[in-house]
Length: 466
Image (cartoon, rainbow, N blue to C red; front, side, top):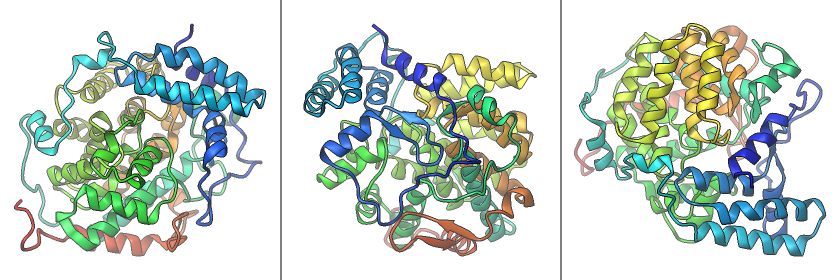
């Protein structure tokens, strides 16, 4: 019997990209109605990524993700082929039964003591995470960055450029992307800033506007309930938990097989922009925000993204930045082991293709939306891209995976380091479009001004001590 990760990898390896030069995307709008019942069940047996049309089977990915968290999922794996066949034959009643059985098998799955994840430590609370970081710089590195508003603007612009670049090709392997597009060094089609990544950052800004640095995970989660009607993978589980009264931080860890996926890592940049040159504060904000939808290694992904962004305001060497930011991770965690392996691999090989082949093979059992292979892709692109945005984005396309999330992080860091080239900034203009009601069309300049103003806020009287 094939393992879930093998089935998912075969699906991905065989998927040929829909050519976005001739096919439109299919993003939801603010009028989107979240599916439920049989419609939601069928969506989770066959889905297409809105921006790229890449194929997904979320129930298969759910089993794969639960295995990656260290559980014995053989009982659930054995049911997946029957579920796929029932879906293909349109047997809805039978599909309901097999779906319930798979979910029950996951809920009852025992710990797999032979799983590599159990070799590592997994602190969840902020105080324990700080203890597990080791020796770090605890204070601000910079009181006020030069041209702060402009650099935050360039960060946002770079993030949106990277996201817009990647959304057309996410979910495919680098080899299959190249088979359709060749080497990519520009937008594939007219860029669109709509995606499901940035909306969570906008919600965090709203909470920060009200509560400042005294904000809590509970407040962030309740604002999700208020503004966001539907999410995917870890965010979908979190919203389900939140709406059932399981509030943050428990909302991210309760029955969430996707808790180590990229959803927290993809939105850590706003935490870094709210704490420019203050990496420990960026990490703290990321921990709070990440706990709404993720746990342990998934939260560490947001911490790494946030610290990379924060340090970009006070550092200029991209490779040094990757190493320094890693000091703010729990040093004995599995996430840190992946970061270390990635850094060691890129340092060892001068040929990017050779390095990526090693990284891809090493992390093959993880879904294309999991945090681990995607942070490897980010490190790969930043290391060999040498600060050049076009080269770095091109390398992300060669890696494949969750290219829009990775492009957002890479683009933000590089935008803070130096202004976004006209090639990437011009086509976007000043427009950010989202599917949040009331935020359908936003000014990027205004967003940067708000972020810069909030970044200057100190601890309010009566709030927690520094």
